[in-house]
Length: 385
Length: 130
Image (cartoon, rainbow over all chains, first blue to last red; front, side, top):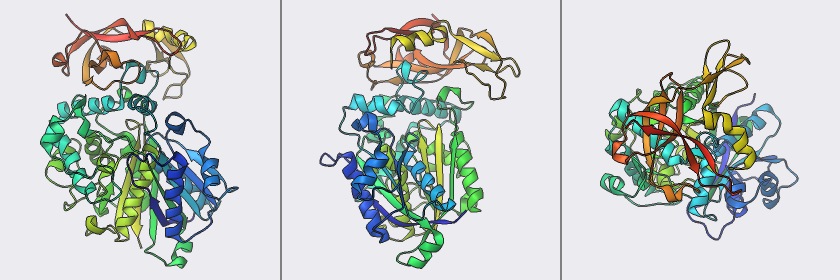
């Protein structure tokens, strides 16, 4: 297996992009990534997208994107793992490059969510849950994460304010990200008093409905070293794990087993301990998710994610910054694009190009992308050489 | 999705809570599966108990398509007396009554008014003990 590096990144602004179609978004992010890498040809394309069928009435987007990127007849394929589709696109591309099947591969993620009504979007997102035994009964995604929150608060004494603090912290970060959808400061009181969605979660505990795309170009590490254009970012681990997609079938409702499994394998693959990671981009689709992810990744002990957030561990100036991009909460969550947008932020930070939100210590970082209520998790560890 | 074929296929477990027990390791599955996590493919029919308690809960205020008229409504994960779990609505329950440990009984109820095919879907809901 060959080592793999990231040589180019690109992303669109995240938000309600009324003038851009599904293909426009993907192609814009891809062209930016190709320009950044300095390549005009790619050997293969992987597009992560959760549901172009339900959001845009379009399937078969692997070929569509290869065509509109002017790269046909290269192989192009779409991969799907709900909200972890972006992370899966990168992992799939890595397999192509590491195996020697292709040299230069574009891994992109996209979702066009605002062409449909809010009710239709809620329905489309709920297809990532167990259709027959969860969605059938009328549960929504906020509802599933709300049940994790209720259980976490009951079991560990996590406070309502701790949940809110995740959103407050991520909005503080997103304020400095020009690509972010919601660049505004919010307070704990505003989160707690915002419109109720699924108790105890309010609208400001939830990531938004977003249009957007992101893309990265990967190639063998040895090839990247010869290019010497920008600092070389090596992918030192790429892991994936699954769990029951139905929340109620897990022994512990508050424990994200797929994330725990993928993270443990990633530390081993990269040969590092959690404390050797400088910062992370994680899947804060709801405030409770970031708290549970911190625990599953072994950054804090079980039950202490809320307390750690309250005490500032994960703030931009904390010991372990989490979601310097603003996270899904402030940056926006075009579901298929999210996993690649996390990688975009990490590469930007590792190269020292993050401007006003640049972290002081950024040599090695972790990206955690999650599907559904934790039925899948993809973890990558990146380091700058 | 609700169609006549889906309703018919799901009737044994949705209407009657029919589950199964692995003949090799004794693990209970609801809904039924074709293979156990232990590898065995032999199962015995098993009926789930109808009493249990709420282990976590929420109140759905923004409802998905087909449930809009009912919101807000209570939902929870119910642990039945034998340790099996189901996720369902908690009916006849004011949101302020919801709590972890609430004793409930599973009842046969209407779940959705109608799908696009016009079929009414029935199933199970939990009801607090009166």
